[in-house]
Length: 70
Image (cartoon, rainbow, N blue to C red):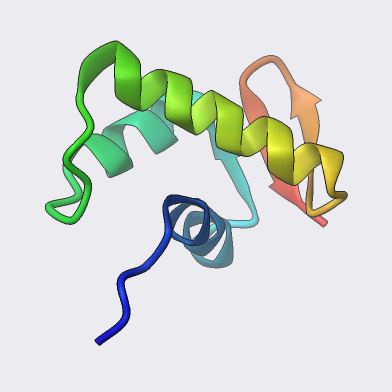
């Protein structure tokens, strides 16, 4: 079975809810047993992934800390 990339895991969160806040992502990913990152490292990876998804046009920022799938 192929390992799911971190960005795919984040995109899957948007498949469940089209609009999601950073706090919801932090909570959801910090409790995900497939992710070994914790604390500030996890938060940095989430923000970095969101930046990449935003730059590629897959999501947009709708307000402070809230993102929406396009």
